[in-house]
Image 1 (cartoon, one colour):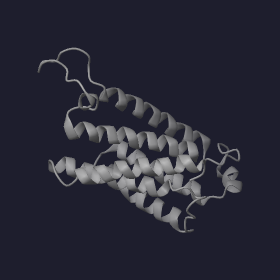
Image 2 (tube, helix red, strand yellow; image 1 turned 90 degrees about the vertical axis):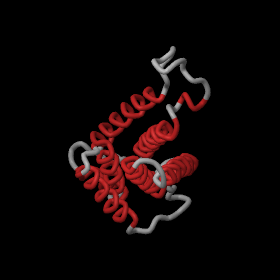
Image 3 (cartoon, rainbow, N blue to C red; image 1 turned 45 degrees about the horizontal axis):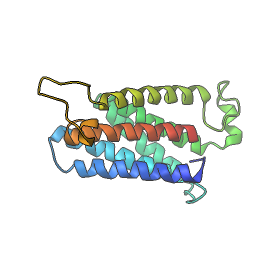
Image 4 (tube, helix red, strand yellow; image 1 turned 30 degrees about the vertical axis):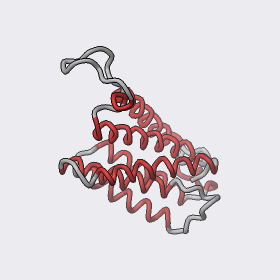
Length: 189
């Protein structure tokens, strides 16, 4: 990815941490949650690999093709399973991989929407940025517990209450983390 070396490494750490946690969570719990955690973990690790700063680690010439193929397959699988958000994420990664393949001087030839922009097609990048902004804000708000007592009793205090009840709340926080990572990757495109 393009952009600051520090931002790239922070993205790698953020996505790799979320991916490792999701894969660890895929070892226990109900079957549906294990499958979802496995998919999210693999997506996060793919994001970490794609976020490696090009100035620090020279990617092989074939890496954008690998990313496009892997995330394209993940997007098709998500569509078949009717997970629209996961499909959007996978196709956003395909879009970024394709943007990595096309040299910046040829981006202007991608249509009237791309006026020699180094970050892909501005309209599509803007739509993806808007989608992930709304997603991160909405999902982040859902992580915050409601104020006041609930039917089960008073609201719990402490960090566990901030991310929801137990491991499911942490998985939701990982999704928000991955959404923030996607925003950063789109901005660095």
